[in-house]
Image 1 (tube, rainbow, N blue to C red):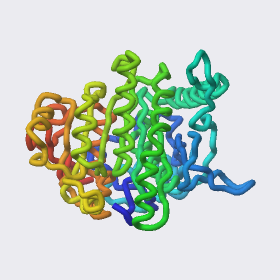
Image 2: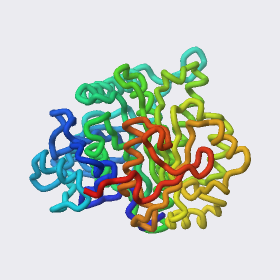
Image 3: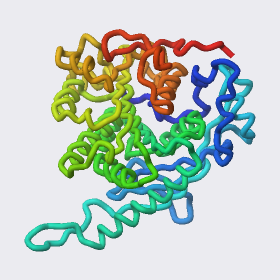
Image 4: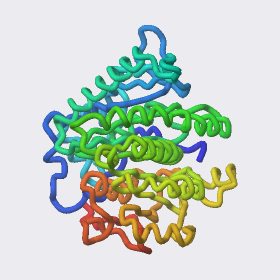
Length: 413
């Protein structure tokens, strides 16, 4: 895993056009809301990275940890002075007449939650959070919701997509990758770059530090989620995570579901739509016991796990933790009878066997044109797997599907 450019790793050019956008003569970007027809993408970020800047210098975040959760806006430029029409045209061809650069131009912090743990007081023999801290937290949450509502007002899809990176990623890596997916979403939904304190230098040292940070950030991710769930304009909240970020996502989702049950919160009020885990750096046995044992999946609309036997990068994690299998490498034969039965009966849980070649020792297939196409069909159109649903994956076994490089069929424009 370490020493590689990951899913949200910094890329200097726009990722390849998804195969989906090579089909027919359709102008896929024709219906993008006019307010979003620009080559400069306004990315909403949320982070618990500590600021790393000097007085009078632009906002910067490093790999160190912050006890408080901040949010703001980053401007990411796609191309060098491209018009919207030029960018849209270059986003719908296999071979581009020019490369499309991706540059982080500016970052502005807009708000910050109180630091955790918040001050406590004792009332009637019980420890409770100080009222002024609760007020400050609610004010920060409301300010964030107001920002999200402003963005929701210009998109037809009233859903939020939270993207969570893996180890070895900088703040810039996270927001530039989110900008590209926000662009390819064609103005649908509100996309959030959730970027946690990763990117420590060193090979083994860097991986271990980032591994710990992926656990440090869990509470803050839940803090973000509950703030968003209280926004009446949001219909669903979707989480897309990669590599070590999948453990952050899965841990937070498990705790959210357990908390919701304890509070009597309904599934509809939780608003948890898609949970997508790509190239997951989690122990498969731990996933089965922790998440399967607590039956959290019935609180989620759909769970999709993308895995690949070609993912050589996860071999390091297997060696380091002496895992039987990382979740990002799982194959159908790795499932025990109970897990196979779960896939058979729970039609909203699916595993995708990714059979494409990609860079980064097979770990960075998120931006592959075939995989990207499937994600767009899943997230933006809410399509279940199967040709009859317009998502023509190959069924390998019940709940287990295959994806090849030509997916879906294209006319090659």
